[in-house]
Every structure is written in C-alpha cells, then in structure tokens.
Amino acid sequence: MICRERLLERFLRYVRVGSAADPKSSVYPSSPGQLELGQLLASELIAMGAIDVEQDKNGLVWATVNPSGSTAPAVLLNAHVDTSPEAPGENCNPQVVEHYDGGKILLKNGIVIDPAESPELNALVGHTLITTDGSTLLGGDDKAGVAVIMEVAQSLLENPNVKAAPLRVLFTCDEEIGAGTRHLDVSKINASVGYTLDGGGAGTIDVETFSADMAIVRFQGRNTHPSVGKGKMVNSLRALGAFVASLPHDKLSPETTADREGFIHPYHISGGVQSSEVHLILRDFQTSKLATYADLLRELAHSIESRHAGVKVEVEIREQYRNMGDVLAGFPKAADLAEEAFGKLGRPCRRDIIRGGTDGALMSAMGLPTPNLSVGQYNIHSVREYASLNQMIEAAEHAICLLGLWGEQ
Ligand SMILES: [Zn+2]
Image (cartoon, rainbow, N blue to C red; front, side):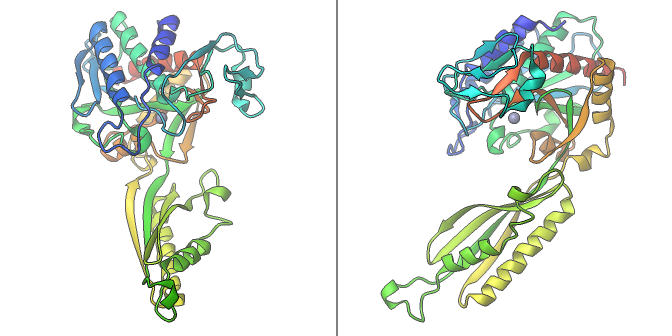
C-alpha cells in the first residue's frame, strides 16, 4: 500500500527546501523556507484530495483525510517542517545509498559516516539510506516525519476501503527553537489523541519527556573605576563565578547523568562588574524534583550573598514544559494502541523516555495526549545525518495500522 519510490521522491523533494529555524529571527516562522515547504505541502495535500487544507497565517499546515467516512474520533499526526540551526541547512544535496553494505559511507566532501562512531548502522545493512554530500544536515529531523505523514495521507486517499479513523494532519514550524506550539490552537486539532512522528530508529514509542524549568540568577554589584575601587567596588562577576563553581558537577550535571537522572545545567553567562547573570536549565522526569533543584539554587545564591559583601543575588524560575508521561498515564490507550499496532505487524517495539522535550509534551499539557513515534532519523543536527527509507516505510505502515485500530474504538 505504501509506495516506496514515491515516499523516497517525496523525502528528497522536501529536504531540498532549506528550512532551518533561525534562533535570531524575530518573525514567525523564523525562516522563509518553512513557509515555502508548507506551501508545497498544502498544494500536494489539495492535489491528493485531502479536505480542510490550510496554511494558516503563522505558517502551520492543516488538513483532514477521511476517505472511508469514519465517524470515530480523529487522530492527529504531527511533524515539524523546520530543521536544526546547529548545522548548515541550505542547499541540501541528498545522496541515496541503495543496499547499504555495512561499511563506511564516504560523503562527497570527504566526511565519513563510520559504523565505529555510528553503531546503529550495523543494524541497517541492506537498507536504503539517505545522506547528504557532507556539507549540510539532511533534515530527516523532521522531514522523515513530514514525508511519512504525506505518504500515509495519500495511501489512505487511494484506498478508501481501508478502515481507519479520520486523520488530522498538522505540520508545525520552529520546533527546533522551542516555538513549535507557540501559535497552536489545540482546539482546532479536533482529535482525541495525537502522535508526533519525530523519533530516531524504528519501533520506539516515546512516552515520557523531561519536566523542565529554566532559572536566571542575577548578580548585582557596584562598579567604580578600578583605580579607586578600594573599599567601593563590588564585582558581580566574582560572585557569579563563585556561584557557578558551587553548583554540583560530579552529580546532577549533564556530564555525569544518564537515563532517569536529572540535572542542573548552567549554559550561558553575560554581564560585567556592575551586574551579571547566569542562565540554567533544570531537568528531571519527576516534576516535583524541579522545586528541589530551585531550592538548591536559592540556597547557593544565599550563601554567595553572605560571602560577597554588597552583592545582591536574585533567582528567577520559569516553567518550560512537563513530562508528558504524567498526562499519558491518564490516557494509556495512546501508547497501548501504538504498541498493539507494532504487534499486529509482527514487529518488535519498546517504550522509551526522552531526555528532552517534544511538541507532544506541550500538546499533552494542553489536553491532547501525544506520544512520539520513530521515523528512521539518525545522527540528527549534524552533517553526518542520515535516514533509513526502509524504516520510514515501516513508520508509514505502522501509522496506517494504528489509525485502523483507532477506527475500531
Ligand atoms: Zn525533531
């Protein structure tokens, strides 16, 4: 039912449209390529016969596909059209490796994708892989998801006899810079469950994300000319440095934690003698731990104040997102049916947790339970990125099976 050649062509067409998110931009979406790709997707959705097709004023692309006339509640499939700004994204020149032989993949500009560094390759012998020429990222994150959803939509429209729940399609913008749901009206989704197709590999159902807050710790000192600083100058940078040095680093840091362990991570400092600040992120799977981490920051800040006369320290905590597992626990069917669909297809699967966030976490918090599914992405955000066409096909077959299960509910 899934057309291999068409899915490949689709993926190649989409990755050629440069759509890197731009963290410095003040407009939405942050780059014109996202609008261009969205326009292409909307016109393809109209051409294939989808209904309610719309690219809204913020660049989000919407559509409905329900050729079998199902009256079951709709299911959302979501992917993001932007790519990471962490590697060049313009002028992507995709390369297709047929029947991958298990060896090193030499890219045109001399960069190598080596199974010694990318051991996931060992499980992909015989697959059709797509790489770049080594000068850009591929953008399989998340154009693999975009291409799979488009192929699912077209396959359903071509096979109205296939029983499936109504499909709501949504392509979002600027996910990579944390703004994927900024202009999302969740009531417009009009579905009972959602899935983001934005995961690596195959057979994975991500059911938990971190819970996340950020902290800004501000240090207020007093500047004078250094020549007359004696007894007058209060250098905020000394207090800031002492504060950062007092943070836990042999535990509770990204460098020393894995799996379910949380951390406090200082990632940016700015300022001068008069005032300075450090930005930190707080992460844990247990939401309640974030308050403990915030308390620790306040304690350390207090102790810095007492040791640096004249310095004022202020700690501000901002909520970012919450573990979607807390929402999914109240709606177990979302992951259960995804698992059942893998079983029906005779494929192994596993539930996993993400040491980060997804748009699905934010959608879950807005009331739409939205786990994340794998779509064959590898080495994302890098010029060594690649994607497996075989696993994209598997993801499309899984999505159709899953829509079928929801149609029976
Ligand atoms: Zn992504």
